[in-house]
Length: 108
Image 1: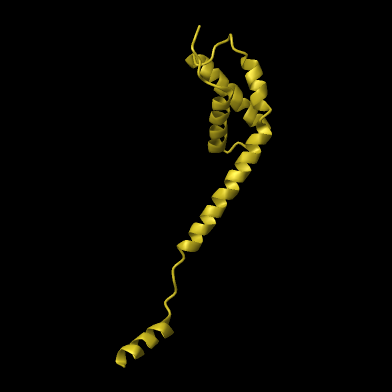
Image 2: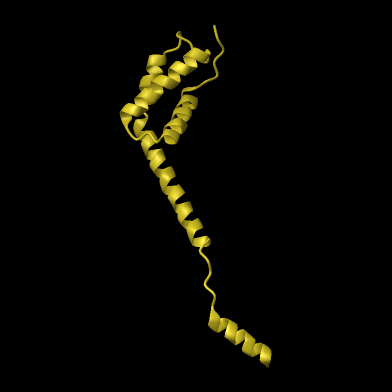
């Protein structure tokens, strides 16, 4: 008997992170990743065969659309931040007329 604190949500978050890192965009690849992660946790003893791992896999497979939606929102937010940073780091053009006015004021 093993003490398991790994929840379905923990596994979903792990799979989601891995899927984003690997650029997974197809359901088939998502399903394969689920199998790999569950098998990995079984091998490490973090899950055991007495647990309904097949049921876990089915529940995780059903969350494909949730992952896609979360990924799309995260990507849109990331793109907005990058766009804002691009605007903030644009070089400021030197205003020669303003410099001329300043030197005229200094002459007074």
